[in-house]
Image 1 (cartoon, one colour):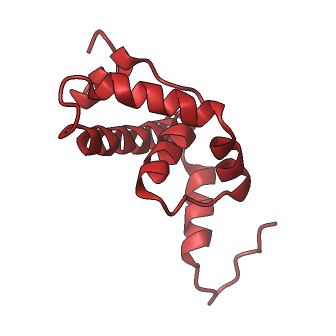
Image 2 (cartoon, rainbow, N blue to C red):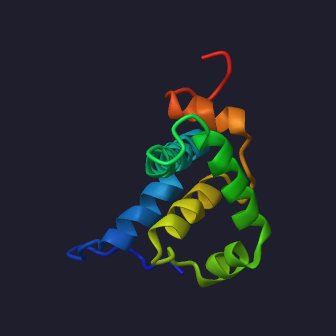
Length: 120
């Protein structure tokens, strides 16, 4: 799976990503995954905000549960590529970032405000 590094060989971007993923401690990989998830959540909430200013977290929660429970999530995961549709891409990134689990309305609201936990 891994090629042996030899003098004069230039590392590709994939090589660097793979090596950094192997060297990086697990807590840092989780932090990076959650940061990516939070960014996708804020992007999705901003897309909903003009339409549903006060109910955006509840609406995102409803859409995320429907997406993760339906055939779209399974087919997107099997394809291992981000969907072309912008809205579905947001839901996909949130699903990947949260390992396929839906988030509660309260958690989505906290993330929108810049906090992950109730005590921070």
